[in-house]
Image (cartoon, rainbow, N blue to C red; front, side, top):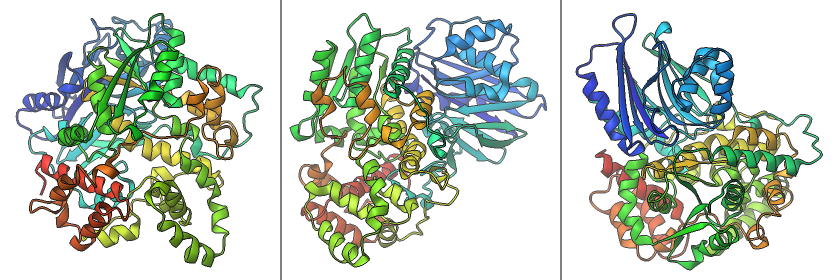
Amino acid sequence: MCGIAGYVATREATDLPRALRRMAGAIAHRGPDDEGFFETVAGDERTRIGFAHRRLSIIDLSTGHQPMSNADGSLQIVFNGEIYNFQALREELIALGYAFQTRSDTETILNAYAAWGEQCVSRFRGMFAFAIWDAPRNRVFIARDRFGKKPLFFHERDGLILFASEIKAVLAFPGVEAALDREQLGPYLTYRYVPGPATLFRGIRKLMPGSLAVIEGGRVSERRYYSPPDRAALVGPRLDADPVGSFLDILRESVRIRMIADVPFGAFLSGGVDSSAVVALMSEHSSLPVKTFSVGFSDAGYSELTYARVIAERFRTDHHELTVSESHLMEHLPALVRFRDAPVAEPSDIPIYLLSREARRSVKMVLTGEGSDEFLGGYPKHVWEQRQAAYQLLPAPLRRGLLEPLVRRLPYRFRRVKTAVANLALADERERQPRWFGALSAAQIDELLTVRAVRPNEPDAVQFDTEPGDSRLRRILYFDQTSWLPDNLLERGDRMTMAASLEARMPFVDHELAAYVSSLPDSWRVRGGQTKRILREAVARLLPREILERPKVGFRVPVNEWFRTTMKDYLIDLLTGPSSHVRDYCRAPVLDRYLREHVQGRQNHEKLLWCLLNLEIWHREYGIS
């Protein structure tokens, strides 16, 4: 796990070596163990190329320095991530005649590219973002992993192309301005994050997950090489005599290969079925107690530490706990906005960061349960979404005149019912899918913002690019896998762990596991009101019943209550004070109404207020007016 950055300049630029070092310095937290640089001039004698690397050493500690070249020096690479099947690929490449000087997965990528060209990415099982300078072809080849676990950003202007693992490295290059792209305010308030390839920064974009980029002749061309299998309709479902056993075998292997490391490692343990399953399977492959790390809240109603202790005791882990409160939120939020280079989409970013710092005291890598819900159907919305057609069959007067107004008046404790009914009322799934976890509807955005609100759900948006005959479950899972997961959860996981110089690996975010579950009928993921059916059956003999049967809590931070009590003054001051930036493009009476309704306990607007609070902090941290 590392940080990468680089430039391709086809115009005159002064002091590029110093600029490259500034870029690397901006992401030093991603790689505190080592740094390296490579600069050259292309065969046209006018294009200049520079690569920078910051290293967090996990595998091949002594000989994995980057940038790394192949045997004849014709290829140079900077790489962020891990290739879990690199040992098998290495043996295959040796049989083809390729020589190796190191034990690193980085050299395996180089030789794989030399052997198979762009198709090499289809051979990798892992998480990655890398750039290769291909001197014979006078081009830079860049690739990002299938689901977007590792980040990569671009900036282009006037004969200069920059790329980096984090936006802050791009902004460190002289002359790159930090400016708000106001057209993304609408999508931001719809999703609670900016869906790729855009970012909130004008002129900076993401390389999309499962995509390649080639920089040649001063131009960037991009294409997708992978789409999650849930994009396509299920044709001829797999007839497996033992789907539960087959699933468990793949998951067990996914966990095992992610335990390959030359440094101490552990696991984040929430006490939910996902992280508990990971810890159970890690214990099968470890001769020593697995180190586990859990975080809870001072408000016991939101804390899952009790469940985490059950698993820790069951598998005799070396267990560590951390408790956080609202004071941690206010103390660390500005710093985490800078680590994320974006408004912090989820309040849970803060406890994850604090837990990462705690874990980093004794390990350099952790396994997590991230991604299970998005591939196996683990959210309540995955149950509700399959009932949307039936809901629409109810007579309109009954729905709109009686049921929906009645549900809107229900108190906060019925929040899931309120969310479900509000979203089931939306016939257009392009509007409905973002709304399950989103902040505002299109109409509400138009009411709040004084600037033009661009609609985020264009017909060609990746997250809606599914076959029309597909099931509702597969379509919403595809949305989760191409939007909610990479642009929010995986981005959070990467930034919050790397902010503490800690690597995170996710066994559930595995393309072979995704392919298997996608080949099964929907009922193996969601059946009736049961979510993640195949996982629950697979680990039924491994986990205690109280973990398997507990209701889904989610990693919720009680900001709803804190915004009414201990964080109220902090919230109101930032959003309504004389220095407020968001007030410049929000209608004051509408914003004041949202604040008043929440503080008085009449409505719960925590998602919107959290979005606006973080947007305000983002403005201040980057000096954007």
